Amino acid sequence: MRAGRNINGNAGVNIRPTTRVAIYLRDGYRCGWCWAAQSECDPFQVTLDHLEPHDNGGGNSPTNLVTACRSCNCRRQSVDWETFAGNSRVISRVLDLSTTPLPRELAGLVIFGVISKLDAIREVRARDGASPQTGSPH
Ligand SMILES: [Zn+2]
Image (cartoon, rainbow, N blue to C red; front, side, top):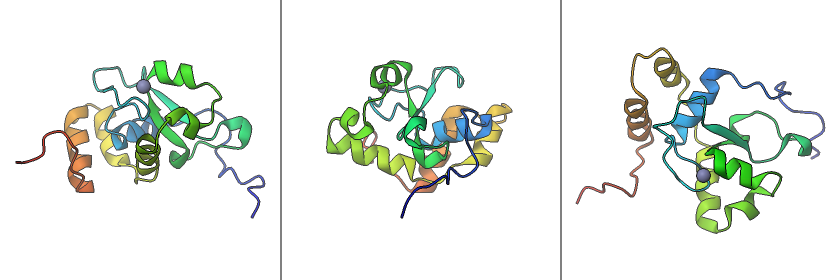
């Protein structure tokens, strides 16, 4: 199977605001690489990093995007993402994040100020049934 020119019609760098914020929420507003919390940042100051760069045929599909702090995104540049991740824990975290469905409707509510980012993050976590390592009920 060759990738060919199937870039799911999303060529270019434009990512809809709803999709952008949905990815931030999916990733818990944390940098996929260093796991630094980005929830205090303006939504449009946080960056999205392409796992597979545009130049290598990577598109703007959410499965190819991960939330990244500006520092990590700048440091990575064109380094292969698995190399940049540095260890299997980060690799599997980024794979988990990138394959989780996007909470688009929640992103819309955040953009329009109906709910807070933190409430939306909690909602996403509750849906996933994810139990973050912080705050284990014990
Ligand atoms: Zn980072």
